[in-house]
View (spheres, rainbow, N blue to C red):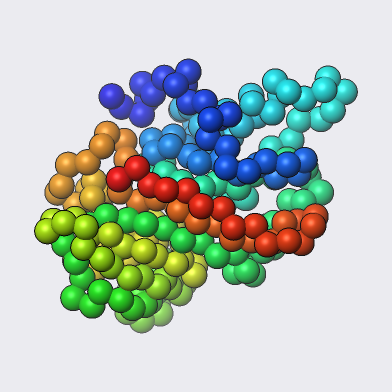
Length: 225
């Protein structure tokens, strides 16, 4: 099955909601589904969220839904949406100011030489791929994450990752740079077959301040590795 043939009727937003109130919605995105529309009209999470909200919205109320961040198409996990324009700025600023804690889990076929540490590079998007450098070059930006690796079985290693910067394909490129591409990620060097339309990378935890109450929210999603 290709992503183009992904049958939208099998995507049930109501079964994927991790949290919802009057101003925000948090969804557990399946792998293979884009977050936002593309030029080819593929199914996407934003479209499905709008359908879900419209179905229960009073006719005199304006429909609004906007994702605050994105996940790559083959990546699964937590995505945050604003349901009111009034909270968009607050949430966007929390991400921009790096006050949001973002945690991921990934599987690789082999472990890195150092099982716990920090990965730091200079990152630049070149065409449709992330390229990493050990020194600053034109148009590059600093990319950083913390990780810890544990062995699940002899050929499967679980990475617990805290992402400090959210650059294009950052985790995928940085793990590949250690010699440990994520399972299924053939763009960054994996030769291990994995599930169709997906790689073994999951956004498993998102912590931020509620834009109205200012209370800490800590959402967790478990990967289906």
